[in-house]
Length: 89
Ligand SMILES: [Zn+2]
Image 1 (cartoon, rainbow, N blue to C red):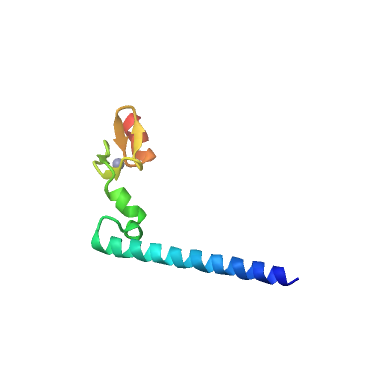
Image 2: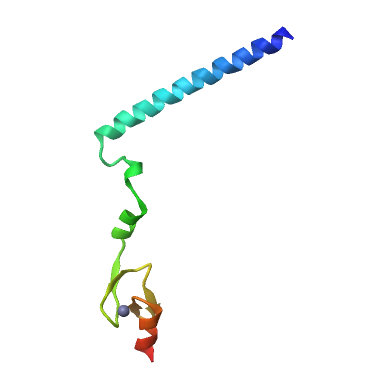
């Protein structure tokens, strides 16, 4: 029965060492990201991706919309399905 206690103790020591190694790694990563502004993963919310997106103007009202939000009819982009329908009718 005592061998189980030693096994548990050994596992705990291994887990503690692994946790310590992970802490040191994350600390090294943090100090690296403090030096370089490019490596800040938390400072990249979804809307910055949208800002970098290509903008197209609606062929009906000239409103600029991100290309992923635009409605494509043939060669023309529209801000909404309603404007696409108005243009084609
Ligand atoms: Zn429009």
